[in-house]
Image (tube, rainbow, N blue to C red; front, side, top):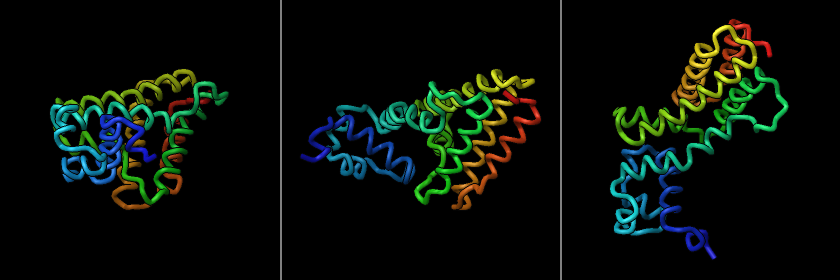
Length: 191
């Protein structure tokens, strides 16, 4: 039995959209290719999703939490707050070393769409804010002088590092981790 018979057409479309949009981009992924990859007809797609834009937004909403979770240590982890922040950058370093790394799906979506009111841009912004909020919570626990500013700076380092890796098609060689460490030191985040 194949996976296409075990999952619903909706689930297959969401998964295909996440994979194709992440790897090839939203604009360059046509509805025909999307439907072919998911093993559904165009008619089925439009019965499930009013527009391709709706599918873009829902796919990002569906798969975004897993993207965030892949960078953040488990809640039960005994790591101190500073190390929990650095673990995010260690994970980014690992991912950027893989040839199939295509950048942050949230930044990629918002950048490609260029419309802050697009439903997928709203979802992307919400997920990116979750990462910033995580940094702020951990920075406060680590005793940072200004946790909110530090969190925003860390997010900029994260996004810039991912973009640099895509642009140069190379790993980061510890650069994002080194930069995050320097920011933590500058904000006296020792915990």
